[in-house]
Length: 303
Length: 190
Image (cartoon, rainbow over all chains, first blue to last red; front, side, top):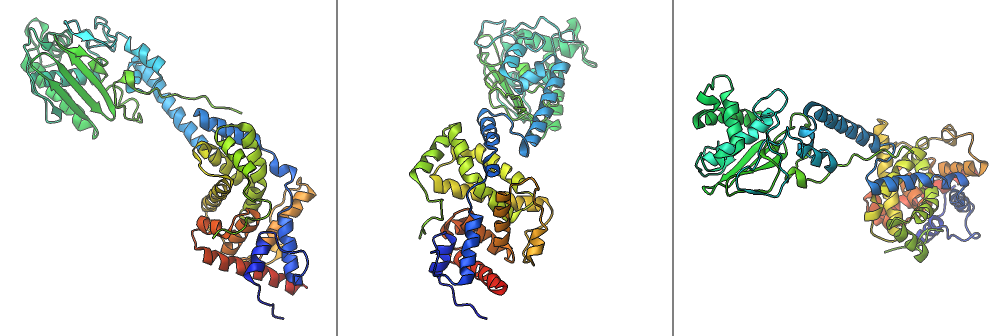
């Protein structure tokens, strides 16, 4: 038995639930009845559970982690990140982690007051609008105020920039008087002492010569820049004793300012590249760590 | 061309205001939206993924909750957004399950009856679920999807065309064939 053609109007009426109750062929009346049943009023079980949506909405608004699905993945990532931060804090007394910008501001501000981090000081006549701590406290295991390899890299980057011997990856030029200019700063004196203490760099009076420092620093910078595909360093110096060295390695950045007429706007130079090996997943920080946005580690709703 | 909206789902100023309030973070409005839209959402998903409808519905709502503040539009737009999300999630789910959407027709009501039904469900709900299953029984995946979006989701053929990425004319042809197939099935059963 063949069926009469169904008009487009009837189809639309059936689909929109506006088909007349009577007047339809029997098979279409059954289709209508089926459509009506599928559109029956909502049952209780279909309307419960709104609280989960509210919870997800709150989580989305507050940056917290919604339960299930991607939230679990995010949670794992945050856990890993938190673990990395904890490890960094444990290993470096908070310095490396804070300087990478992966810890909240409260940690950051505290870390910048940690003597072991603050290697660059402005004992000169330079002004400073960033908190400074004199480098009189020694870093664990080191006797000359020099901290980790990353801080040495920062010092070397600044030194090379000031002396105008920056490697190809360091942009900048300038010169200064070693006795009165920025090279006379405590930081570079510490660097000179540090280099003098290194194997193969014996120097009279425990102070390495500029040539020795340069040789040493070329090695340090070379190692860093070849070791990281993302690493780069920018140094700027002028004869007035202002020196800026921005070093970036794997997304870390910092600023080093030193000099007799100079100003210091950022965090001390050692901040430049620290911690990149510790927290490899840290997102790039485009400004000095003190201005970096805090990365919150929200608590899990747990509901 | 926009057709008259489907039953009970006409765009209304009241519902539009509820969407706007929800967008601004009014939790009562979010609850209201959920109560209004979750039943058709669940039914749509039951027609597509009988055994995972509730899980996927939860995913859809989480996704909607995340994007609600940036959503722009009225209640009709919200409905279209909700079901577009549901369709995507159901496709994702099928992919996750390692199988592609079935293009073969469901052979019989017995096959549909074999799909799991929670014993705790009320008789009323069972009846609705059964109607949804019967609606898509014997239809191709494409026909079933269009029919569910038109009948259960309450979308116009234009909105469905936009969601499934086909022309409105194609959607009309698909829905026509679907209704015809259903009618033929009933005719055979008479």
